[in-house]
Length: 134
Image (cartoon, rainbow, N blue to C red):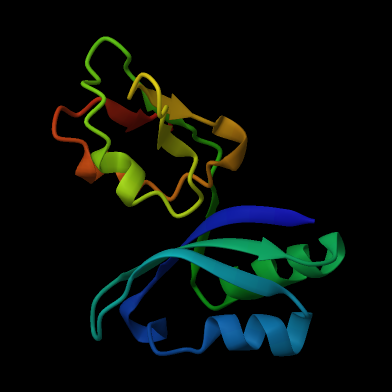
């Protein structure tokens, strides 16, 4: 089972080796999609957790008991076709190649099934055609 979640760490928990402890204590793998972590500041990680469903739930409860906020990412990337200029800048930052340019037409193609909603494409778009529907 896989779950994509956003973890928000309070300042006091920022140095806790969470991904290591998830693997060691719960046999849950944490694929880090995006991280914003700095000493003495609130930290955020977007991770895809994978493992047995019961162990995933235990791991999430454990993180919450450590005052780590866990929110489920249910949003999707949305591309406004009326605004998009098909420049292709977003394709360079997409880690899963969910965004690509068609070789014949140079039109942007979005393969939703490949998207992990890492949101790296959003700040890259020069015309703000990419958003999330959170």
